[in-house]
Amino acid sequence: MNRDQAEARGVQAYYPKDMAWCYGCGRLNEAGHHFQTNWEGEETVTTYTPCSEHMAIPGFVYGGLIASLLDCHSTGSASLALYRDQGHELGSDAPLPRCVTASLKVDYLKPTPLGVKLIARGKIRDMNNKKVVVESELYAEGILCARGEVVAVSMPENFGK
Image 1 (spheres, rainbow, N blue to C red):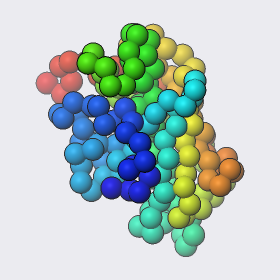
Image 2: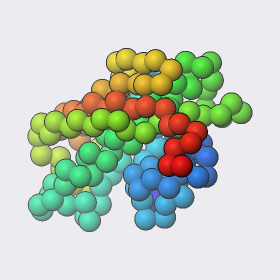
Image 3: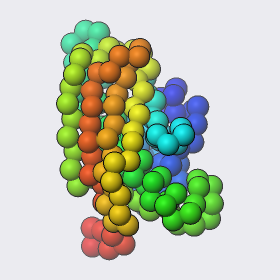
């Protein structure tokens, strides 16, 4: 588990066991990143410090990790937003909506340094009971390095069947 993930339990810690295997945010995937997303005021936040194996070229993070972080951050943000819209907060007994990515767009704005804490911040731009649009920004040492937009949809109960 990445050292940032020990800092806070996010929405991903509450996903049901059968939905907790994602390489990016699944708590049950031993090899995964274990991203955790929480509310911070009206924004969502996920932090992660990339390790040497996340290198593109010496000193910089590869784009796939950035896309994965923005993706999982955004689907987690969508779940948080739907849950709050239903009148619930993390830790309540109500079933948590699980969202999946319908669309992911990432703009890489600056090279992202390796070995420093990355902070993804998200805002909910549009939402209905089945779809949430999340805009996120990724910062390293206070510098905006990437911007993303995810259209997340509620996972149907019969997903994969």
